[in-house]
Image 1 (cartoon, helix red, strand yellow):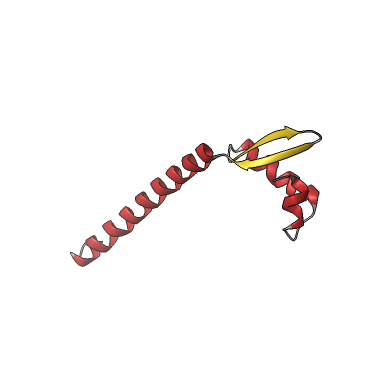
Image 2 (spheres, rainbow, N blue to C red):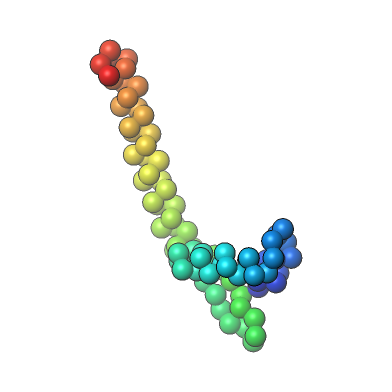
Length: 78
């Protein structure tokens, strides 16, 4: 979608959408393509997959830590 198309569907200004898209592009989460004078933005599937992998790893470690605490408390050792 173009910045204008995105902004039309959001409660923020076009400049704000442009700023957010720049951050997402710099993070590798969206791609842009020049079509005439417009820029069309698309989700970068590889970037989103990498983010998902990072988040999954974070939550796996966090939940394992919580599990260890619960198991230690059940054994009476904290």
